[in-house]
Amino acid sequence: MSADEFDPFVERLFARTPAMPDAPLFTAKVEQRLQKGSRARFLALSLAGLIGGAVAVRETMQVDIDLAAPGGVVAGDALGQGIQSASLNVQSTVQSGLEQIGLANLELGSMGGMQLFWIAAGALIALAAAGVMKLSQEV
Image 1 (cartoon, rainbow, N blue to C red):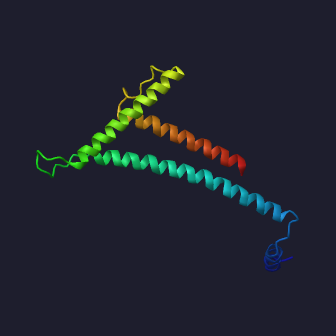
Image 2: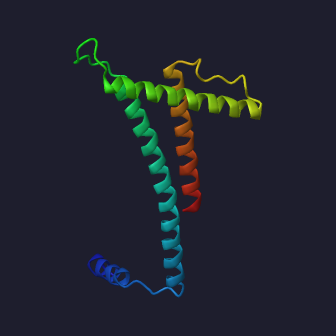
C-alpha cells in the first residue's frame, strides 16, 4: 500500500466510530459525576464568596478617608464599631469552643497578619493539592 493510499484508508477507518454496548450506562455515570462535582463546587465557591465579601467589608471599613468635619458622627465609624464588636463576640465564642475541646492555649490573635495570611494560603494550597489528587484518581 503506497503512502497516497494509506492516508485515505486510515481516515475512512477513523471516520466511523463503533457503537459501544454500554454507551447509555457510561453517559449516565458521566452525568452523575458532573452533577456531583457541581454541587461541591457551588458550595465551595459560595463559601469563598462569603469569606471574601466579609474581608472586603472589613478592609473597606478600615480605610481612613477623612472627608467629613472633624467632630461629626460618621456612619462608617458606627458600622466599624459594630463589626469590631461582632468580631470580638466571634473571637470569644471560638475561644470558649477551644477551651471545651482542650485547646485553650491556642492563640492565633498573637500572630501577625502576614503569618495568618501565609498559614491560610498554605492551607488553601494543601486543600487544592488534595482536590487535584482526588480528581486525578477518579479520572
